Length: 126
Image (cartoon, rainbow, N blue to C red; front, side):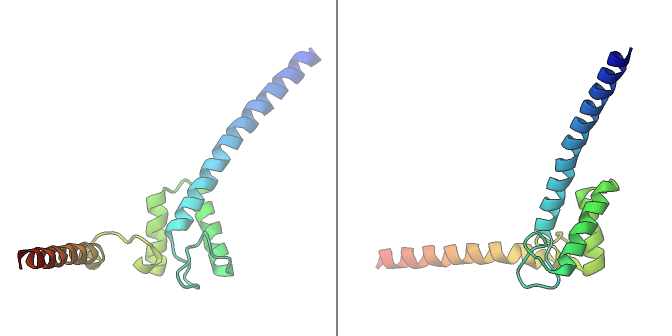
């Protein structure tokens, strides 16, 4: 009787620890991924993941807590954008105020390639 009970408890603990181990890293990995997409407000050109400042540590802990509460990545990014502004995100949402951030680099690239092609064509022609 004791052996069956002990084996049952051991099996239950093994299954429970395996389920906990598999859910743990996924939350941790997701928290790391989110922290790589957000800027540290107290340092220049560093994301939260790289920053070791106290503010960044608090924000990383908040990300982890929000994930444990069941929030999605998009919800967490919106929470931080509402709290700190769109500049907290490395890739801001595409809307009317940020459209220039998305269009201008591509426009300059097309303009640069077009000017280069025109100059090359004109030089070959003469």
